[in-house]
Amino acid sequence: MDRAAAQDRGQDERSRTKDFKRHLHALKLAAMTLKNTLARWGWLAQFLHWLIVVLIALQVTLALIADDLPLGMKKLAMLARHKSVGITILGLAIIRLLWRWTNPTPALPDSLRPYERFLAHFTHAALYVLLFAMPLSGWLMSSARGFPVSWFGLMQLPDLVPKSKPLYEAMLETHDALALALGAVVLLHIAAAVKHHVLLKDDVLRRMLPFTKSR
Image (tube, rainbow, N blue to C red; front, side, top):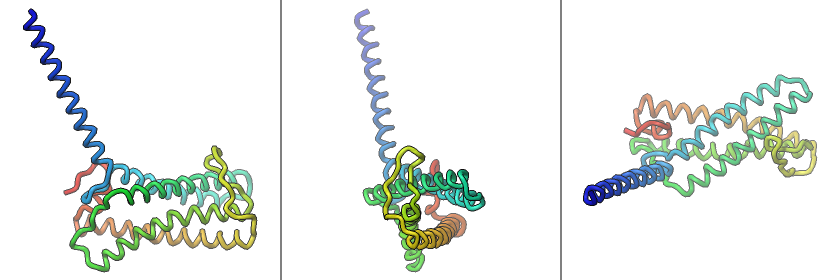
């Protein structure tokens, strides 16, 4: 009986050891996929990328709805949501840039020509600049107009500049111009991704898609 009990205990210990090793291996795999590699974007970079894409689409929708509303409480409420989403994008862009600086960046395909590499780097740099410039110009515009900026009513942000009508008008024009520039760069970015996936058939788009594997 004692021998059988000892054997059972031994099997239980081996089973627990195996379970622990499998759990540890799963945690290591999760940590590995969290970070970028030279071949693929990690899941955090993917999450930030697609979340910002969704929020940009939401921003465009909110701006179009607000433009069609007459001046009143509904319009102001819609603009407040627009500002809150803009501040969220700004915060996510900061996190994404910091994460990019502390992680490896997947290499571009060797088959790219020099001008294609230049366009790829230019597009990425322009996107980051615009992700910062758009919310900041909107924040400056609101401050110059004398309208406070809050984050979903939970936290009021400080005014960046004192009230100034000329500055407000300048920031309004700047914000509109930046919106057009962002739209153009996003279209260029999408066209490049489609070209890589459909024509060149490489992993440039696939490695940013969740739940997929690189070839």
